[in-house]
Each structure stands twice: as C-alpha cells, then as structure tokens.
Image (cartoon, rainbow, N blue to C red; front, top):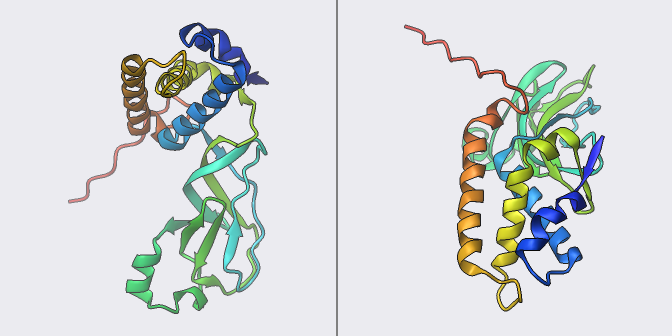
Length: 214
C-alpha cells in the first residue's frame, strides 16, 4: 500500500499561510528526496541483471518505478560480492586501460546513479547476473511513498518541507528564522539516521561487530 504525499498537507499548510497546495506538494517531494538520498534508510534489492562476456556497463534498475537509486550499498555477481572502487583508484592501480581489461570481475565503479562499470570485464557470461542492494529515493514524478516508509519518516519529511517553504524569500509565508531552525533539525535527523538506521535499513537488527584478529 502507498501513502500520498498530499496527506501531509494538513501538517504543512497551516504553518505557511497563503501557500498554494501545489507549491507545498513540490517541497514535500523535494524534502523526501533530500532526506532519503542523504540518510540512505530506504533500501531495495534489484532483480538479477543479465551480464554477457566482455560487458562493461550494467544498468541499476529499481524494482519500484516510482523510485530512483541514491547509492549502491552492495553488489553481487553470480552470488559473489563485488566491491566499489573509484575511477581514480583504478587509474592508479591498473592504469588508463583498466576499462578494457578482462578477467574475473571483482569491482564496480558507479559511473552515474543508474549505471556501473565492471572491473575487470567479465570473461564469461554470468550464470545468475548482478544483484544490487540500493538506497533509493522518490523519483521526479512520484506522488506517494510506501506506507511503512511514510509513517516512519513522516515528521522529518514534513519538517523539511516547512523549512524549504519558510526559507523562500519574499513570500507571504516566509519565516527565515523558523525555517532555519527547522532546516537545522532536518539536517540533524538526516545525519542521525545516516549514522545508525542506514546500516540496518528499515529493520531493528543490529550491525554485527567486526571480529578483531590478533
């Protein structure tokens, strides 16, 4: 089930007199996008993406068409974990021709939010494909959020929207001081969730401690 962003309007509009509903809805979406992109608390697993021998680029396709990828949290090729890397690091380690090297794929580079480059290029076609664990956020045309996500992060999304509206200059509802205070709280909540809940997604499971080897 899904919750419409418009259901948040009664918690926003009384605080921004004369603000059109369409403007408030726009800022609710922007607030939700900002919150989920930076906090990384909303996760999804992509379906296996087929990979052929020598294939360089793999698309990151969110299972929900109303969402966009914010960040890849983990990736597996044929059930084997592959690890993130940067273009700069691969240039240093493997040289400028790393994009054409072939072998057992061990790393990926996120070239855009929607596409990764495999390294080395797979020498054989994947039997199962690539699966991504992705932090997601609402897409540009999204008007809803899943019920559990909408309920859990309702206060943060509303606070962010009110802050963005109040910080608009020269509007009948402008309130720079209150807007700044709300934005400060919004940023603090983003940092708090990013540091804790983002490691567990939406569950209450604790992240296992690393084993200390002597």
